[in-house]
Image 1 (cartoon, rainbow, N blue to C red):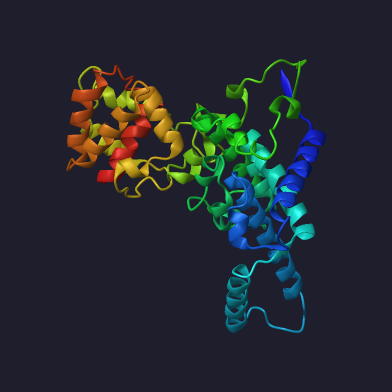
Image 2 (cartoon, rainbow, N blue to C red):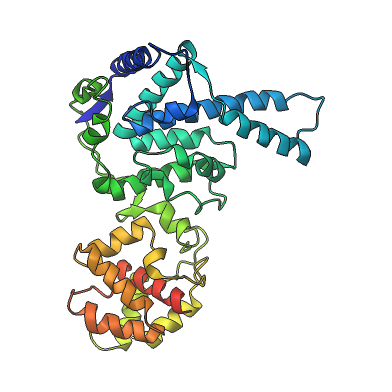
Length: 366
């Protein structure tokens, strides 16, 4: 089963929605202010996308201005003056109905897209970013993302490691696969549009029988296990060397854990062997020191540990992290894990999930 977007329905709906809203608002006034835009509809995402588009248009005008060969726009005094000018303008927003209507129509269309297909929407956002400045672009626009923002916010403040566009696009897709079940439902998001005009999701998403059958996500190159490749590669600084750069004799995490657990009691972990292994591990960023574990887990790690190590119980994971945070040494943490979790929760001590969990704990106490 494949799903096609009815672009005609989307265009017509966005136009009719904006006409209704504008007719209501401008019936007794000529202009709309910035504060009024933020409170215009019951859909906060629509309101903020209007402001976002206005900011983009300002940036386009500023770029044209800076293209003039007669002035030095790199001068610090000019930069500060332009910043102050923008701040003043932002508090003096004043838009007439005929100019506001197309802004609102585009905002409605974008809100529907981010509700129904956040992966495609945020991938398109990344494509808008200037070359080499994807992270800066996302940080600058973070305040405008109100729906399904968790699909992309894991990249913000944690990227900028020189990865190419394709890596960002794959990261967004993979991260969505991890967290999609925890996102707010499409129907609830689109319901905020209903006080103006009901949105017919069935008319917008046209289902067709797929000749090739459903796609198995686990077979696609954008996922590794069940978590985001990009977070694994970059965000939590557990980046492995490229496969092309690794020696053919480099042990896998499963092979390493097998060797380590053989030193300790059957089905238990040996802290001395673990410590020796992690101390010599060559993963980039491996020796970075973490703060509290409860604050250091990426979305993909929290999902993986909850599902594979703590029987799907997020509260149990939080309690374990808080307890480990209160300990003084790596050895104490391993002893706690052996006594409280390995046997009781029937951990596979040779699994990659256990390896990554212990790796983080080592980094905390290293």
